[in-house]
Amino acid sequence: MNMKKLISMVLVLACVFSMAACKSKDEGDKKEEGGEEKKTLVMATNAEFPPYEFHEGDDIVGIDAEMAAAVAEELGMDFRIEDMAFESIIPAVDSGKADIGVAGMTVNESRLKNVNFSDTYAKATQVIIVKEGSDITGPDDLTGKKIGVQLGTTGDIYASDIEDAQVEQYNKGFEAVQALTQEKIDAVVIDGEPAKEFVKDAEGLKILDEAFTEEEYAIAIAKDNEELLGQINDALASLKESGKLDEIVAKYIKSDAE
Ligand code: ARG
Image (cartoon, rainbow, N blue to C red; front, side, top):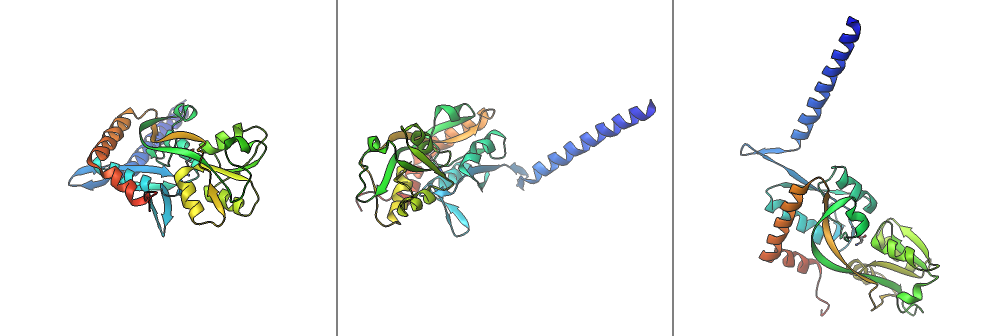
């Protein structure tokens, strides 16, 4: 009898101690500054998506990276980026491993089941990249073709809806574009701005004029974090109002006129 009691007490104590250990580890994340705790805003992304997020040496730069850093600054928070597979971003946000998902992420119904989205910060399109001289001249010609996409993206979702199309899913958008260059596939469906970046660096590829869809990018936040949603929207509004967001965009997207 007593033994049982002792064991359960030990178990309770072990729990209490491990909880305390977890807590202090958590608090280790926050820096003390002027006696005040500074929270770190953790951004989950997939840095394979220029001009929104991409690697530059050891850094991750781009519109999303700078915008999120500016949001953190507005909120008086420290800032850190976690790079991961695109498909892992929503689970990371949902589970609290990251506070926000910022990845040129399109707002759509199925994602809204798992996360909240901030106000939108950019308009986007899905475009079709083909080889110069291709017989594909618009979305209707994609029927029955081999289409490359980045796994888990809206391009992937749309391509999968095309009749008789064979969809090849790549971990990086750039890999799909490479496969097109090597004529392993007939077309790539991907967001317009990354498409421009990838085509610029490739030989013999072009973007079709007719856009496939129109979409909007927003920041993903955990469903149970309504407070952060409000804070992010306020910070975004002030970045829009001050012209800071436009400034960041202009740094990475040169006008078509050049
Ligand atoms: N806009 C598309 C989507 O939301 C593609 C985003 C891909 N982003 C990235 N960082 N790889 O599905």
